[in-house]
Image 1: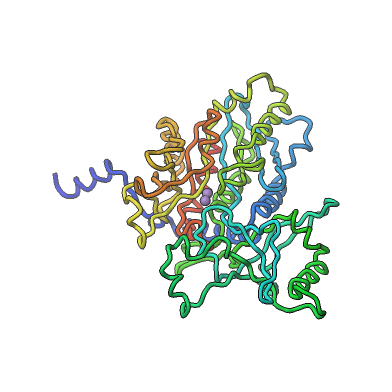
Image 2 (image 1 turned 45 degrees about the vertical axis):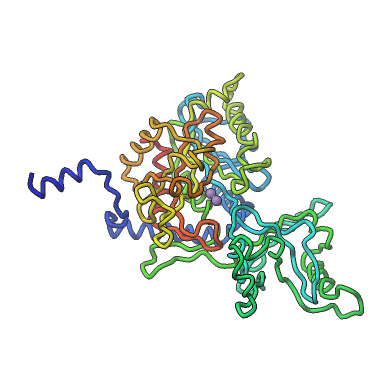
Length: 469
Ligand code: MN
Ligand code: MN
């Protein structure tokens, strides 16, 4: 066999793993860069789960979706959403086939690792005033000092009045920061393990330093409370019923001389929220009903009544069955058993600087398209929802027919760590599920990195999955 024939044979038999940019035309490259602009704009106003839900609702309504509560009866082609306590959201486009035949579901999560304020956050020390925090999700605590931070969230007064806070994003706003020790005096600190360099109780946000003009104790705290009272009409006690989140006050930006990447906070998993949501907006007519999930609390185990473990999602699907006039005992379970799902969550992209934690044959790479994880878990796949080969084949078929760049990977080398997503929760209901999202570098850091090509392929891939043609 000559060299040319052998090359052709290789092409036919090998699983080609190629950089996705190579096969894109100039027109396609423009479409990729253009789509990323919309994503960056969305990210810059959507740093928390509440903001994601608010902005996603706007996008959905612009595309003809309505609150399910506005409908007495549902019919084929109707587009509805349900919002759970302003933090999670489900959307549906009713398909032509009976719901009993199963749903095509794509689910991502809106929450990201961050620092939350404690219920009693405010204190004064040495004429500085601070907010105490409790971190949320898996973070490297040392990454959260000496960077600009913004405060986002709500304060709810006992009369029910809800005050929205977003301070630190506008260039005219002040920002906040958590100080770190100067290297000159950090001899002891620098010898500590990375988990102990910054202690959780030291993640205190510096928020003020001017004393109130009167001879009383805690003058600086009094001055800050006076400012908060004038600006928001609150007292210290109102912070007891608040949800205030500290997020990096750094905008999401295009990255690299070639503008091929995106850097920004919270791309895990808002990149999958945006790509699935905008894919759903393209859909008018379908055979099977399309469901889009934007869940909360994934980063702390999907717990609570806004997390995926809650039964609110089941209630939403039951409502669809009720309002289609087809519900009967045990139908919900049957619907789930016939359903299919992409658990749209980010994947750990191989980072050449830290390649020792990845196994190159089974790693996902930035720029090679949407990343599928057949399973996640740790220590012998523990805790994983391992997608069935039959379902993996079906997803491959959809992606290959639609020329979606995809890669199937594992989360790191065997026994170096692990992770999980919402996949197993839906799998427990009988749904066929596979993890399917965008590879990320610096995941869970204040500034995560993704590829615009992968974002675009996720968007195209999600739409193809819903259309299933
Ligand atoms: Mn995630
Ligand atoms: Mn995560």
